[in-house]
Length: 193
Image (cartoon, rainbow, N blue to C red; front, side, top):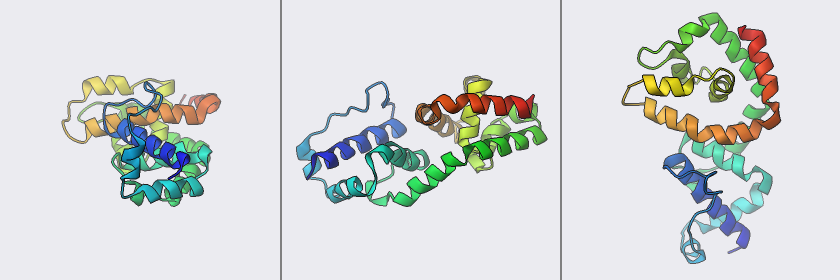
């Protein structure tokens, strides 16, 4: 057992709780109550130790976000470096994806995408994978609408999970794009207005 492996284990627990429960990773600064003894008794301890050698420290947050975004209860033994690589590629291609998604939204009609009947079309397209979740969060940062939709949509299935996914992912995503957000604002204004 290594100290670094234990730290990865704590991060795993904190991020899993963030994405699957009411725990807020940012409010508690990623801290969770866990003992070294509990870590040593796990039958998957080797997975955490191995992860310290495969995933650089700077990529570990992205590694867990990539997995928990798709499956909030993902087990450490089911996680792979490939998923991290896909996530990093998605972030690298985000400017192109965002522009393409905006063109799609413009073609369908922005007002049509936002109409609240059952679940607004823009959310349906994100759930179906036709529009990137990052596009939705970027647009909401420019023209806020998610909270309004949260109040108006009353569908008891699918919607609550989708909304939770957006809210849990958004702070990590905002950290990821950081100072680059102004570029997306300019792109959105150029395409939609």
